[in-house]
Every structure is written in structure tokens, then in C-alpha cells.
Image 1: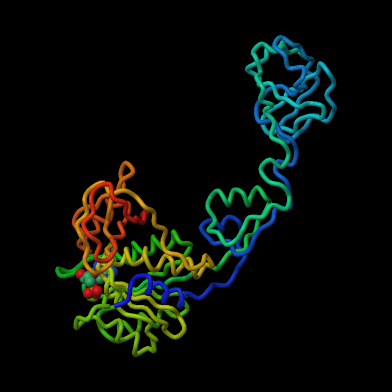
Image 2 (image 1 turned 90 degrees about the vertical axis):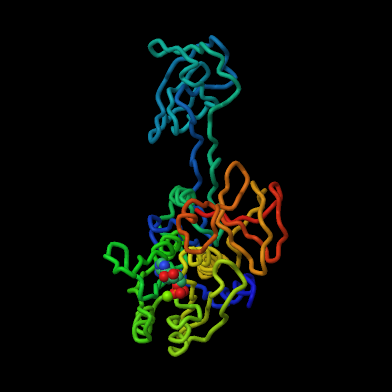
Length: 391
Ligand code: AMP
Ligand code: MG
């Protein structure tokens, strides 16, 4: 059996870099920026007021000083003149600061009578001016690769970039296998259950900028599995779920092999998720996840997410881990790396209770996985452990 890191190396070798495409900014969130983008404007393009108030000369801004209001500068329409001593311009947030002014006295510090104002509260030292280019200058570069956050999208909009070069979204074929499965909303027979894994994984993959395609459930027969695997053609990644152990009804390896899959590995020294397989099926990378729902989701987090990131040009990196103190004792571990469902609360992490890999309720109340190394000794509250946070 290979280790998790060895398995990841083999998965990265399967993860082909996707091509670059240009998408409208509105479709860019969550996608991976493929090329650096350069600002061809400066923001703000002029010195702008950060408050509603009066623009005047800072040296004159003494308590009880009086000014004549000679005009108004609003966001979108500036006052064009040059301010002279003793003059002030009514100004609003985001409006250009007039020539000759270098301070905005906020309206709360001023009393107005007709076109005269006097400073009636100490205006303090702040000038309340955003200099031109304080956010970014023309020529500023947003580096690639990076997964575009909502904040990045706002920045690109502000840079006046309407089209964005991104890696194309990986299309992932998701295949549940099993005679016992029906899709949510169907009426299951007495010996049937609802297919949950494809739905959980689809949600996870969408969060990774992928396009999941849930294919029809494959029955535990060679013709059915063959037919569904053939439907997966054209995907950038094929993910099967279940049927990967060595039981009489576990046919995924056999059928994929008959269709020509070159296998990279089978079985990883981890809990949950030992019966993980991967390879290339007619050129397309394929990962066979274990069927138990929590195993499938944990393997999605540990293996499929980094693989998708690699395909989108983000390099070969593990799902992020952070070090955190245990909030409760942790029993010694066996020979397989254990990804324990866990709860982070008040800066400490503890296991979430029963770790059976069929328990979706435990997964749903967890917000993290403790990564418990192979053969690790018993740990006490306060000891540091590695944690993967779940969103
Ligand atoms: P298998 O690997 O096919 O033996 O499946 C292991 C366990 O996971 C069995 O209890 C299956 O019923 C269950 N299982 C397999 N696939 C799914 C799925 N898509 N959704 C929910 N449970 C599943
Ligand atoms: Mg099965």
C-alpha cells in the first residue's frame, strides 16, 4: 500500500494542465487567473475626498476660522476652479479635491450660514483626502495563477478589465455505482438507499471552479458500468464512487481495465479511504473513490481537490493544513493515516465522535479533519496536531 503523499504524486502526474480561455468578468469568480493582468488606469484617478464636508486650505483650518463657499464638487462632477485663501468648496465623498485645497473639514465640524461657514469643532490633523493612485497605479499587476475571490473580481472591475484569462473549468464526470442506489427524490425499494456521494462531491467540486456532471447511476453489472463509463467520455476527469473493493459486486477496476485503463495505483494507507484507485482511461484521468459516503468526501478533500487545483495551474500542493492545539485527548493511531472528523471550537480541535465512514451526520456537524499520522502515540489536550478545515 502506498502513502497519501505517494498517491498524491501519482495523481499530480495524471493531472493535465487545462487550456486557457477568456471569460467575461461576471463568470470569473472561483476560476483560476491564468495570466497576469495589468491595470491600464490609476485608482482613484484624482485626489478624492473621503468624507462629506468642505475643501479648503489646511493652514487656514483653525477653530472659529471663516470661509466663503464658492462652489460644489460632487462625485462625478468636479468644481473646476482654483481655491483662493479664505475660500471653501462644498464637497462630497468620492468627489475630486479642487486645485488649491489640501484638506477636507467634515461637515460635522462646521456651521454654515448662507454662503459662509465657520469651523466650530476642532477639525483635527486628518486631511480626509485619498491621493490619486492610493489604491493602485496604472501598470499595477495582479499576479497569476490565483483563484479569483470576490475581492479579486471587484479589483479587476475597478481596473476596467471586462474579460479575464482563466484556466478552463474542469468538467468532472461523477459516477455512483451500486444496485442499492436511487437518486434523491425517487422512491427507494425496501433494500435501497439514496445516492448521496455524487451530490456532496458535486457541491465540493463546484467550490473548486469545476463543472460536475452527475451521470446515471451504474448498476453492479458489466454492461451497465461499461455504458456509464462510456458516457463519461469528453470529461477532463472521471470520478467513480464505490465498487472499488474486492467484493463480488465490485466491478469498477475490472470494467475500467477491460476498457483500457492504465492503472497508477490501487489502495492507499489511510482511513477512511483505503480502496482508492487511479489511472488513465483512454487518455482521461480517472479516480475511483470508495463508496462509503464519508470516505468519498474525505478522499474528495484530500485527493480530488488538489488534483483539480493542479489541472487549473495552481501547482502541486496539498489541501491546506494548519497546526492547532487539541481540545481533548486523542487515542493512539494504527498504521494508516487517519483523517478524523473533528470540531474546531474556541481555537482548539477535538474529534467529533464516532468515526465510522458511513456517518454523514458526524461529517455534517464537523468543520475540520484532524490528520492523525500513522502509528502516532496517544496525544493529550494541548498537544499540536495538523488540521484541514472544511468549508
Ligand atoms: P462499495 O464500495 O460499492 O462496496 O460501497 C460501500 C458502501 O458505500 C456501501 O454501503 C454502499 O451502499 C455505499 N455507497 C456506495 N456508493 C454510494 C453513493 N453514491 N451514495 C451513498 N452510499 C453509497
Ligand atoms: Mg457498491
